[in-house]
Image (tube, rainbow, N blue to C red):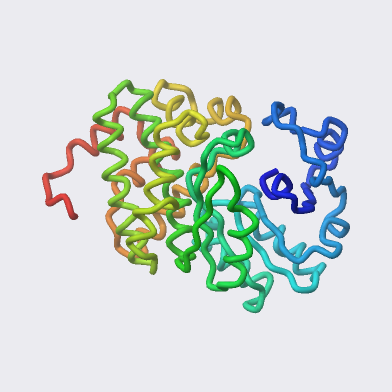
Length: 315
Protein backbone atom coordinates (compact mmCIF):
# COMPACT_ATOMS: atom_id res chain seq x y z
CA UNK A 1 0.00 0.00 0.00
CA UNK A 2 2.76 2.43 0.97
CA UNK A 3 4.87 1.77 -2.12
CA UNK A 4 1.84 1.95 -4.41
CA UNK A 5 0.65 5.22 -2.88
CA UNK A 6 4.01 6.75 -3.67
CA UNK A 7 3.33 6.21 -7.35
CA UNK A 8 5.32 2.99 -7.72
CA UNK A 9 3.61 0.26 -9.75
CA UNK A 10 3.33 -2.54 -7.18
CA UNK A 11 2.14 -6.14 -7.39
CA UNK A 12 0.74 -8.09 -4.45
CA UNK A 13 0.92 -11.89 -4.34
CA UNK A 14 -0.12 -14.33 -1.62
CA UNK A 15 -0.43 -18.09 -1.25
CA UNK A 16 -4.22 -18.01 -0.70
CA UNK A 17 -5.84 -17.72 -4.11
CA UNK A 18 -9.36 -17.23 -2.75
CA UNK A 19 -8.20 -14.38 -0.54
CA UNK A 20 -6.40 -12.73 -3.47
CA UNK A 21 -9.59 -12.97 -5.52
CA UNK A 22 -11.50 -11.25 -2.71
CA UNK A 23 -8.89 -8.50 -2.55
CA UNK A 24 -9.20 -7.98 -6.30
CA UNK A 25 -13.00 -7.90 -6.10
CA UNK A 26 -13.21 -5.53 -3.13
CA UNK A 27 -10.10 -3.45 -3.92
CA UNK A 28 -9.36 -3.48 -0.18
CA UNK A 29 -8.55 -5.96 2.57
CA UNK A 30 -11.95 -6.30 4.24
CA UNK A 31 -10.57 -8.76 6.78
CA UNK A 32 -7.91 -6.52 8.32
CA UNK A 33 -7.92 -3.03 6.71
CA UNK A 34 -11.42 -2.39 5.35
CA UNK A 35 -11.01 1.38 5.65
CA UNK A 36 -8.05 1.49 3.22
CA UNK A 37 -8.95 1.22 -0.50
CA UNK A 38 -6.18 0.03 -2.81
CA UNK A 39 -4.44 2.65 -4.96
CA UNK A 40 -4.74 2.20 -8.72
CA UNK A 41 -1.01 1.47 -8.84
CA UNK A 42 -1.50 -1.70 -6.74
CA UNK A 43 -2.39 -4.79 -8.77
CA UNK A 44 -3.08 -8.34 -7.59
CA UNK A 45 -1.03 -11.19 -9.05
CA UNK A 46 -2.72 -14.62 -8.85
CA UNK A 47 0.51 -16.49 -9.69
CA UNK A 48 4.00 -15.92 -8.30
CA UNK A 49 5.47 -16.25 -11.79
CA UNK A 50 3.35 -13.38 -13.11
CA UNK A 51 4.06 -11.32 -9.99
CA UNK A 52 7.79 -11.53 -10.72
CA UNK A 53 7.58 -10.66 -14.42
CA UNK A 54 9.86 -7.63 -15.04
CA UNK A 55 10.11 -7.09 -11.28
CA UNK A 56 13.57 -6.69 -9.74
CA UNK A 57 12.78 -5.78 -6.13
CA UNK A 58 10.65 -7.86 -3.78
CA UNK A 59 9.38 -7.23 -0.25
CA UNK A 60 8.60 -10.42 1.67
CA UNK A 61 5.98 -9.82 4.38
CA UNK A 62 5.05 -13.36 5.39
CA UNK A 63 4.95 -15.19 8.73
CA UNK A 64 8.56 -15.98 9.52
CA UNK A 65 7.99 -19.74 9.59
CA UNK A 66 7.07 -19.56 5.89
CA UNK A 67 10.14 -17.59 4.84
CA UNK A 68 12.38 -20.49 3.81
CA UNK A 69 9.74 -22.24 1.72
CA UNK A 70 8.87 -19.00 -0.08
CA UNK A 71 12.56 -18.23 -0.68
CA UNK A 72 12.96 -21.70 -2.16
CA UNK A 73 10.09 -20.96 -4.53
CA UNK A 74 11.82 -17.74 -5.58
CA UNK A 75 15.11 -19.59 -6.07
CA UNK A 76 13.41 -22.09 -8.38
CA UNK A 77 11.97 -19.28 -10.52
CA UNK A 78 15.24 -17.32 -10.48
CA UNK A 79 14.05 -13.88 -11.68
CA UNK A 80 16.92 -11.81 -13.04
CA UNK A 81 18.44 -8.95 -11.05
CA UNK A 82 16.54 -10.03 -7.96
CA UNK A 83 16.82 -7.92 -4.79
CA UNK A 84 14.89 -8.97 -1.69
CA UNK A 85 13.76 -6.96 1.34
CA UNK A 86 12.40 -8.63 4.48
CA UNK A 87 9.47 -7.18 6.39
CA UNK A 88 9.03 -10.18 8.67
CA UNK A 89 10.50 -10.69 12.13
CA UNK A 90 11.67 -13.88 13.76
CA UNK A 91 14.30 -16.58 14.18
CA UNK A 92 14.03 -19.85 12.25
CA UNK A 93 12.92 -22.81 14.35
CA UNK A 94 15.59 -25.43 14.82
CA UNK A 95 18.39 -23.61 12.99
CA UNK A 96 18.30 -20.39 15.09
CA UNK A 97 19.02 -18.47 11.86
CA UNK A 98 17.99 -14.90 11.13
CA UNK A 99 16.17 -13.95 7.94
CA UNK A 100 19.17 -12.76 5.97
CA UNK A 101 20.91 -16.07 6.71
CA UNK A 102 17.89 -18.02 5.43
CA UNK A 103 17.93 -15.96 2.23
CA UNK A 104 21.67 -16.46 1.75
CA UNK A 105 21.22 -20.24 2.02
CA UNK A 106 18.28 -20.39 -0.38
CA UNK A 107 18.96 -17.60 -2.89
CA UNK A 108 22.76 -17.45 -2.71
CA UNK A 109 25.19 -14.87 -1.39
CA UNK A 110 25.04 -12.81 -4.58
CA UNK A 111 21.44 -11.65 -4.08
CA UNK A 112 21.27 -8.21 -2.39
CA UNK A 113 19.06 -8.34 0.70
CA UNK A 114 17.71 -5.78 3.16
CA UNK A 115 15.57 -5.70 6.29
CA UNK A 116 12.76 -3.22 6.99
CA UNK A 117 11.87 -2.96 10.67
CA UNK A 118 10.70 -0.52 13.31
CA UNK A 119 7.59 0.63 15.21
CA UNK A 120 4.97 0.46 12.46
CA UNK A 121 1.48 -0.93 13.01
CA UNK A 122 -0.10 -1.54 9.59
CA UNK A 123 -3.35 0.27 10.35
CA UNK A 124 -1.51 3.48 11.26
CA UNK A 125 0.74 3.28 8.20
CA UNK A 126 -2.19 3.03 5.78
CA UNK A 127 -4.01 5.78 7.72
CA UNK A 128 -1.10 8.10 6.94
CA UNK A 129 -0.13 8.61 10.58
CA UNK A 130 3.52 9.58 11.25
CA UNK A 131 5.78 6.49 11.21
CA UNK A 132 9.53 5.88 11.11
CA UNK A 133 11.40 2.66 10.30
CA UNK A 134 14.94 1.42 9.71
CA UNK A 135 16.16 -0.12 6.45
CA UNK A 136 19.27 -2.23 7.03
CA UNK A 137 21.45 -3.75 4.33
CA UNK A 138 25.09 -4.48 3.56
CA UNK A 139 24.30 -3.26 0.03
CA UNK A 140 24.31 0.54 0.27
CA UNK A 141 22.67 0.99 -3.12
CA UNK A 142 19.75 -1.26 -2.27
CA UNK A 143 19.24 0.43 1.11
CA UNK A 144 19.24 3.86 -0.52
CA UNK A 145 16.77 2.77 -3.21
CA UNK A 146 14.39 1.36 -0.60
CA UNK A 147 14.56 4.48 1.53
CA UNK A 148 13.83 6.66 -1.50
CA UNK A 149 10.76 4.56 -2.28
CA UNK A 150 9.46 4.44 1.31
CA UNK A 151 10.40 7.90 2.60
CA UNK A 152 7.46 10.14 1.75
CA UNK A 153 5.12 12.51 3.59
CA UNK A 154 4.41 11.13 7.05
CA UNK A 155 6.52 8.00 6.54
CA UNK A 156 10.23 8.31 7.32
CA UNK A 157 12.91 5.70 6.66
CA UNK A 158 16.50 5.62 7.91
CA UNK A 159 19.40 3.52 6.64
CA UNK A 160 21.59 1.17 8.65
CA UNK A 161 24.28 -1.41 7.92
CA UNK A 162 23.53 -3.45 11.07
CA UNK A 163 21.37 -6.20 9.57
CA UNK A 164 21.89 -8.54 12.53
CA UNK A 165 20.91 -5.93 15.11
CA UNK A 166 17.81 -4.82 13.23
CA UNK A 167 16.63 -8.42 12.75
CA UNK A 168 17.34 -9.54 16.29
CA UNK A 169 15.65 -6.48 17.81
CA UNK A 170 12.50 -7.20 15.81
CA UNK A 171 12.51 -10.84 16.90
CA UNK A 172 13.20 -10.40 20.62
CA UNK A 173 10.70 -7.57 21.11
CA UNK A 174 7.86 -9.96 20.21
CA UNK A 175 8.78 -12.24 23.10
CA UNK A 176 9.05 -9.33 25.52
CA UNK A 177 5.68 -7.97 24.36
CA UNK A 178 4.07 -11.23 25.51
CA UNK A 179 5.65 -10.68 28.94
CA UNK A 180 4.35 -7.11 29.10
CA UNK A 181 0.88 -8.30 28.17
CA UNK A 182 0.96 -10.95 30.90
CA UNK A 183 1.93 -8.30 33.44
CA UNK A 184 -0.97 -6.05 32.42
CA UNK A 185 -3.31 -9.05 32.26
CA UNK A 186 -2.44 -9.66 35.92
CA UNK A 187 -3.19 -5.95 36.61
CA UNK A 188 0.33 -5.28 37.89
CA UNK A 189 0.25 -1.69 36.70
CA UNK A 190 2.39 0.83 34.85
CA UNK A 191 5.40 0.48 37.16
CA UNK A 192 5.73 -3.22 36.38
CA UNK A 193 5.29 -2.63 32.63
CA UNK A 194 8.03 0.01 32.61
CA UNK A 195 10.34 -2.29 34.54
CA UNK A 196 9.68 -5.15 32.11
CA UNK A 197 10.45 -2.92 29.12
CA UNK A 198 13.67 -1.68 30.71
CA UNK A 199 14.90 -5.08 31.84
CA UNK A 200 13.73 -6.60 28.56
CA UNK A 201 15.84 -4.07 26.68
CA UNK A 202 18.81 -5.17 28.79
CA UNK A 203 18.17 -8.78 27.73
CA UNK A 204 17.90 -7.73 24.08
CA UNK A 205 21.18 -5.84 24.35
CA UNK A 206 23.06 -8.73 25.97
CA UNK A 207 21.98 -11.21 23.32
CA UNK A 208 22.27 -8.75 20.46
CA UNK A 209 25.82 -7.75 21.25
CA UNK A 210 26.79 -11.41 21.66
CA UNK A 211 25.62 -12.31 18.14
CA UNK A 212 27.19 -9.28 16.49
CA UNK A 213 24.63 -6.46 16.62
CA UNK A 214 25.47 -2.86 17.48
CA UNK A 215 24.41 -1.12 20.71
CA UNK A 216 23.08 1.93 18.87
CA UNK A 217 20.74 -0.27 16.82
CA UNK A 218 19.06 -1.65 19.94
CA UNK A 219 18.66 1.87 21.31
CA UNK A 220 17.01 2.99 18.05
CA UNK A 221 13.83 2.40 16.07
CA UNK A 222 14.33 -1.32 15.42
CA UNK A 223 15.16 -2.00 19.07
CA UNK A 224 13.78 0.28 21.76
CA UNK A 225 11.24 1.90 19.44
CA UNK A 226 9.63 -1.35 18.34
CA UNK A 227 9.86 -2.76 21.88
CA UNK A 228 7.93 0.16 23.40
CA UNK A 229 5.31 0.00 20.65
CA UNK A 230 4.68 -3.73 21.02
CA UNK A 231 4.66 -3.70 24.81
CA UNK A 232 2.31 -0.76 25.25
CA UNK A 233 -0.36 -0.89 22.53
CA UNK A 234 -3.08 -3.50 22.04
CA UNK A 235 -2.61 -3.44 18.27
CA UNK A 236 0.30 -5.79 19.04
CA UNK A 237 -0.79 -9.40 18.66
CA UNK A 238 1.98 -10.50 21.02
CA UNK A 239 0.83 -8.12 23.73
CA UNK A 240 -2.81 -9.21 23.26
CA UNK A 241 -1.76 -12.82 23.66
CA UNK A 242 0.03 -11.97 26.90
CA UNK A 243 -3.03 -10.08 28.16
CA UNK A 244 -5.23 -13.12 27.64
CA UNK A 245 -2.71 -15.49 29.20
CA UNK A 246 -2.42 -13.20 32.22
CA UNK A 247 -6.21 -13.25 32.58
CA UNK A 248 -6.28 -17.04 32.54
CA UNK A 249 -7.19 -17.81 28.92
CA UNK A 250 -5.56 -21.08 27.73
CA UNK A 251 -2.97 -20.63 24.98
CA UNK A 252 -4.90 -22.45 22.19
CA UNK A 253 -8.05 -20.44 22.87
CA UNK A 254 -6.08 -17.18 22.98
CA UNK A 255 -4.39 -17.91 19.65
CA UNK A 256 -7.73 -18.79 18.08
CA UNK A 257 -9.25 -15.53 19.32
CA UNK A 258 -6.43 -13.48 17.79
CA UNK A 259 -6.77 -15.31 14.48
CA UNK A 260 -3.37 -14.27 13.08
CA UNK A 261 0.19 -15.49 13.51
CA UNK A 262 1.67 -14.42 16.87
CA UNK A 263 5.38 -14.47 16.06
CA UNK A 264 6.53 -14.37 19.68
CA UNK A 265 5.12 -17.86 20.28
CA UNK A 266 7.52 -19.30 17.70
CA UNK A 267 10.40 -16.97 18.46
CA UNK A 268 10.54 -17.41 22.24
CA UNK A 269 12.15 -20.87 22.15
CA UNK A 270 14.67 -19.78 19.52
CA UNK A 271 15.65 -16.72 21.54
CA UNK A 272 16.20 -18.93 24.56
CA UNK A 273 18.19 -21.41 22.48
CA UNK A 274 20.45 -18.61 21.21
CA UNK A 275 20.85 -17.33 24.77
CA UNK A 276 21.93 -20.82 25.88
CA UNK A 277 24.46 -21.10 23.05
CA UNK A 278 25.99 -17.73 23.94
CA UNK A 279 25.61 -18.23 27.71
CA UNK A 280 23.43 -15.13 28.05
CA UNK A 281 21.08 -14.69 31.02
CA UNK A 282 17.57 -13.81 29.77
CA UNK A 283 15.20 -14.44 32.69
CA UNK A 284 12.14 -12.68 31.22
CA UNK A 285 12.40 -14.58 27.94
CA UNK A 286 12.96 -17.81 29.86
CA UNK A 287 9.74 -17.33 31.81
CA UNK A 288 7.81 -16.60 28.60
CA UNK A 289 9.01 -19.95 27.23
CA UNK A 290 7.93 -21.74 30.41
CA UNK A 291 4.55 -20.05 30.22
CA UNK A 292 4.05 -21.04 26.57
CA UNK A 293 5.18 -24.60 27.29
CA UNK A 294 2.67 -24.90 30.11
CA UNK A 295 5.34 -25.58 32.75
CA UNK A 296 4.57 -22.35 34.60
CA UNK A 297 1.49 -20.26 35.33
CA UNK A 298 1.55 -16.46 34.90
CA UNK A 299 1.64 -15.80 38.65
CA UNK A 300 4.45 -18.35 39.09
CA UNK A 301 6.50 -16.75 36.30
CA UNK A 302 6.26 -13.36 37.99
CA UNK A 303 7.11 -14.81 41.39
CA UNK A 304 10.22 -16.42 39.91
CA UNK A 305 11.37 -13.11 38.44
CA UNK A 306 10.72 -11.21 41.67
CA UNK A 307 12.58 -13.82 43.72
CA UNK A 308 15.84 -13.34 41.79
CA UNK A 309 18.79 -12.17 43.86
CA UNK A 310 19.67 -8.45 43.78
CA UNK A 311 22.43 -7.53 41.34
CA UNK A 312 23.99 -4.58 39.56
CA UNK A 313 21.63 -3.06 37.01
CA UNK A 314 24.18 -3.53 34.20
CA UNK A 315 24.07 -7.30 34.69
